[in-house]
Length: 186
Image (cartoon, rainbow, N blue to C red; front, side, top):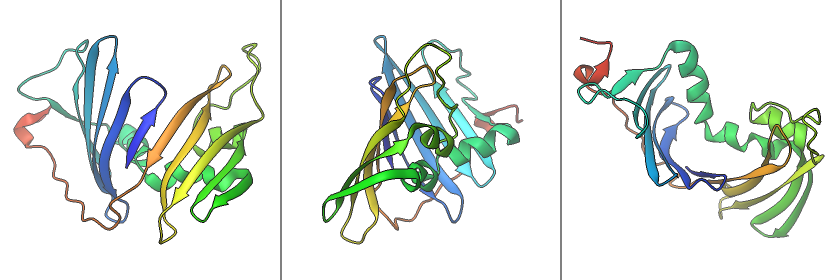
């Protein structure tokens, strides 16, 4: 799964086996001339994180940390490819433009709910569009391989979200980092 969000040169690459609940992802963001990299390893309800963000202090001997159980559940859910595609179930209009390509719109509020985002409001003075657009592509087996969605911002407007799914059925193997590299362990 590859994700591109907004125009911040952000990229998320990784693999997830939703049946075994294991996955590994690396997020790279380039902003203000610097590069930030965050790695996650998901092993059922345990999530490990390592960050190499230039502005944050890091422990070179113990670069990994185990995420608290409360945070781990929501992080693991956030990497669920099916959940990320959930807004497609909320489409209010869909057109098939070819055998494998679709376009349409969603209710802005439904997209926010499907992605667990705050619902945009007009209280900020910004105009919130009632719908946002999407495009989606399927492979020859009818599986979702790509979709683009304009995600509503809480203060009005949207930002682009592009998701690509590939390598279906590829075995996913993930191991916990070595204990001596995890902060808070001995």
